[in-house]
Length: 229
Image 1 (cartoon, rainbow, N blue to C red):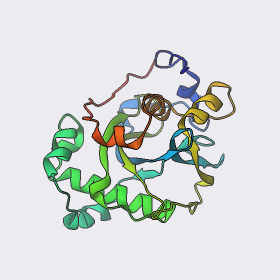
Image 2 (image 1 turned 90 degrees about the vertical axis):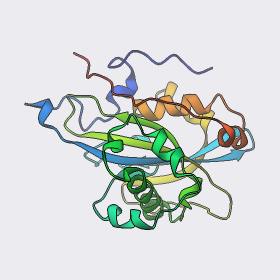
Image 3 (image 1 turned 180 degrees about the vertical axis):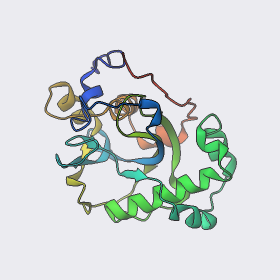
C-alpha cells in the first residue's frame, strides 16, 4: 500500500534537501531555474520492477543524503552533442515537452537527450541509445528555494548487457532496488526522497513489468508547484 502524499510543503519529501532547508532567500524570483535531466533506469526483478538509484553523500549542497536517479544539469557542451542525436520518431519528444520551457529552444529536446546520455555515462558507465529514452515527467523546483531546476525525467529499460555501476563522487552508493522496497523504506523514515522521486516511484509501483511501461502512452503536464507560504 502506497501512503497518500501530503499537500505540497507538508510531506517529509519536501524537506529532504536538508542542505537547503531553512536557508533564507532574499529574492526568490532572482534564483535562476536551470535545465536538468534525470533518468529512471528500470528492469524486471524477481518481485517486480527495480530501479537504479544513487544514495547522495551528506556533504552535497543540493539534495544531500537523499535517494535520486542518475542525472544532472544540462551542460553548454550538450548543445554540440545534440547535433548527432538521432531517434526513430522525433515528434514523440517534441510533443512530450511541448508545454515545457525547453520547447522555446530550437531542437531543445535533442539537447535534453544529449545531456541524459552524457550524465548516465558519467555516473554509471552505461552508454544509452537515445532511442531507449522515453519522456516521462517534467518538474520545476518551487519558488523560494536557493537552487531551482527545470528537470526533465526520462524512463529507460536497461538490460544486463548495459550493467550500470557506481562511479560518481556525488553518491556513496549506487544500486538496483525494488520500487516497493524504496517506498517502504521511505515510509518508515529510513530513506529520504525528494517529492518528484517519491511521486514517480509511486507511479511505477502501479505497473508489474517493463513491457507495460514501454507500451504505455504516457501523457503528462509540467509540474510547477508554488512554494508553500
